[in-house]
Image (cartoon, rainbow, N blue to C red; front, side):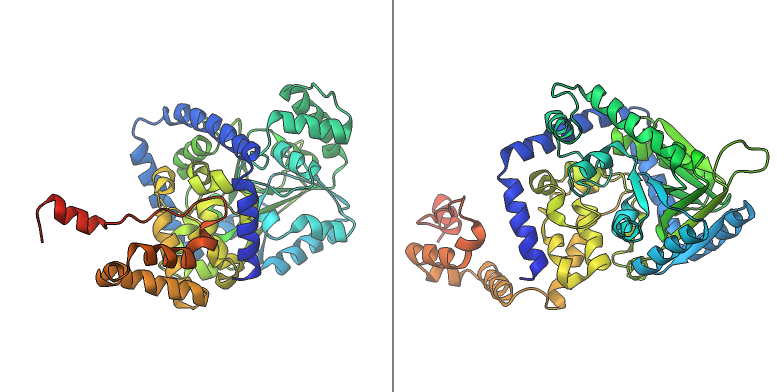
Length: 460
């Protein structure tokens, strides 16, 4: 068992048996589930919408190079600049180079999974560049000195009372503040930062190939504020963020908002075509799109697993996952959590170190059912498990137990040969530690199911 797996099991156990923590997660997710029902009501044929979205995203990964090159050409015709980054280091170097050329000393940043993936904030701090997180959820976890907990809802693990107590301690706000009071406090605190920032950084939900545009969907207006006031706007995107046509948004945006927040459409939907034109009064003077690979090409060429790149990052798979709802987002210790995170992490960070995440799944299939682009997540997790074992990354103990279970399940005589007492001893020897100290091992019956079946049906 490697260090990452040990940390995962230790963190998961702490959360799974912390009742208050689990109650917070499940309460917030239950509120989300109620909202999703309303969002789904806008679709006359939801299944058909999901099939169309899946086809759009599949078309992308099958023609990725063509759409990316077309986007670059069209975006630069609009006055912007596309910069390519092979990995995390190149991405950081590119961003720092842009900041140096434009004398950037202060940045406002929207919620961004890719910036977390490349650890952008720490890199900026090392260069004495101030970075202000403008997303309310990210501001809360930053105040708590924590990482984001969920791909779309960074503070989903915290109750209102947790946040009120946190802000009272850190900022001396009213200890009986309402949720509205906290939101107003954050907005007032952040609002002044937009005017003094030299640059704004955002993600892109989609890069639109045929128009060379960036599509961004949000609820708080912080993306629009970040791009409107700053003289430089940097969009962070990964190679799979591309979509072929602007008309694809009429399917993808409603699905994204429904499965992310339960809304029929997010509050603010922006299509940005580049830096401001001479006749425009606001917007950035310069706009860059940094397109990052960071091992996604390895996923792309793997025909068994590349459907993972069709994900639109709605977070719905985490919200239905019984494992995620019990162990929480921090246990994964990676940027992308839940089922889709468990699929991608072994490729983004290494199969040997993170392949264990693909085993943190009951294979219940709820993530398959809920995915708006119909990714067969449980199939992909099984493929990861296969590759993990075939590369001999699992322990010798696991290999032994797998072989023992296979022999026992395929042939009856090893089980019939042992007495009930001996079976219980073997069960304790093999599984007592992994079963955990909080649970009792099941009691083995005197007669096996096979024996009882024969007796019930008068068989010999």
